Length: 302
Image (cartoon, rainbow, N blue to C red):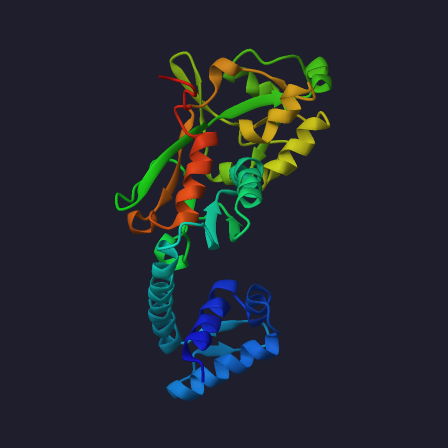
């Protein structure tokens, strides 16, 4: 019995939320996933999952074994990387986490360029607005928006995350152009569902502060849905600059209330200091910082 493989499968089931999800992640059949779990339970003499027709949940023993297995697998990955650290050519799997919108429009293109330069590297890019545990979840690096609270990580500053308020020309022709934050009350506004829980950006107008209106014409849980509505003239949208940049450049959306924009948020590329020796990570950090580093590098300076 391959204990490490069984542990890897068990951890994949927990992280994917199902046997089928783990099968897709590992590239094996769901039946084979079940066999690995059965072997592990037989070896341990304990049930790891409570099975039902709808879901599989961890038993108390399973929860404890899952945490220990994650730590063991991370140690194995670190031991394997010792060989890689001695190689000059970047190679192997690089796991990177990034927020959804920033990752889609800024990090994913950089990853593609990086892979074109380094043919022996594979990248697993996970886009999610959840903050991952680098060591616990097996990531080499992560892009994070906001202040870095984990002082144990190396944090390289990237271009700040800026917001833009914009609308389609047709909407502005019908409803007029808002001059200040107080004008939002008479406009149709498009809102992210997170903002309905008052977790949002604060607008500034002189000495006053405002929140994006709660009585939004449309609420959506993804910025792309709000962007599509704004392009069709449904209302004002406030979304990251990186999401709306192309629309603004071609005039499909027009920026408004630029003096009221929320303060930009810091962005960092973070990684554990003991992994910076890995050629694949060192080259990736160099690549990302070279393009998105903040303040921008001055090329050709003496």
